[in-house]
Amino acid sequence: MIGLEDRLYILIIKKITRFIFPEFIIQKFYHIFIGKKKYERLKKKIINYLENEKIDINFKNDERLSIIDNLKKNSLLFPYIDFVFPYNFVKKYDFKKINVFFDSESHMRYTLFENKKLFFPKKMSVKEIKIYVNEILISQDNESPHRYNDEDFLVEDGDIIADIGAAEGF
Image (cartoon, rainbow, N blue to C red):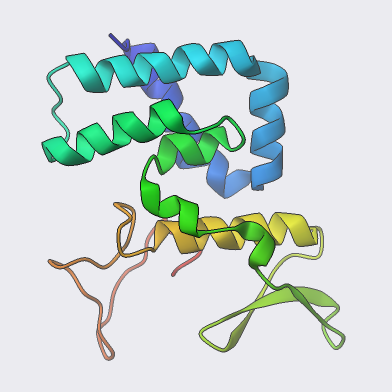
């Protein structure tokens, strides 16, 4: 059973670090400071919780089984992604395939999103930008539980919304 301290730990990692640190920093933190063994223990606790505990989260049973299966099968290459997106659809994304361009006027890197330039801070490397954009795309995939729009809620042209707390605003 996952204790309150572990639940808070997972929540903190999930909610805060993504907005503060680029993915490569999170990965280094996991592997250097937390270590592979501790990560594996935490992963086992999450799997055990999902398999054995009465869950108060609004999961469909097949979704829960899919999450358990993915957590068991996934490698430890991107532990943060494993925890936040333990779904099969994540496999169709590859940060290496994201194109990053350089704008000579602003001296900033950017990617194209819906044919518009999405600029990034100068301190971000090409790899950091690729990983960051990949995470955004994963989070807004039609199968993602983190997607803003779904069958019950759809923002359409002309709608006004308050996008409070969303770092990217996608």
